[in-house]
Amino acid sequence: MRAAIYARVSTYDQSPLMQLEALREYAARRGFAVAGEFVDHGISGTKSTRPQLNLLMEAVRKRQVDAVLVFRFDRMARSTSHLLRVLEEFDALGVQFVSYAESIDTSTPMGRAMYTILGALAELERNLIVERSVEGQKRARARGKHVGRPRVQVSPERVLELSAQGHSQRAISATLGISRKVVRRVLGEAAQAGPKAPQDSAA
Image (cartoon, rainbow, N blue to C red; front, side):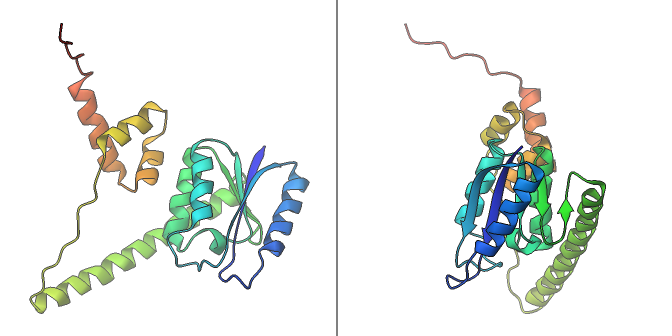
């Protein structure tokens, strides 16, 4: 089994060596072949941009790895909902996830149970965010401010491309950051439209 190791340290003064050594030893014990090591230096857990994590996710989507190993949950994700989105994509692509310190392996019954618990926690987190957002909008309206957010740009061509490559609706949703409802709508409209007729070429 091909495994990718991901480590992160918040400052450049810190060393990821302890994380890497523990994960290398774990991989050897499990008989995993380490296909790559991805390390983000000097990046806090709240930062959404992580160059090495992005490269890791590309490798996962290209099916270049079968398992992802991290030292702790918080090394991988910046929130419970973010972690769940990552795990959902791994699950859709058949990629095993291991968190060393928490002894969580999504290929085991205990790991699957933790996956379910994370889903419940993420749902609670989303509900709290929605509740705070609604209260904030009410206060803004009371002050006479315009309330709204920009529409998420959806590329139907990208949705259809990923679908043609064999990706599930869940994986497409996670990859493009759109809801599965939107994915289903795009695919449904494409199915109703049918294949495009070839254009006549000029003589």
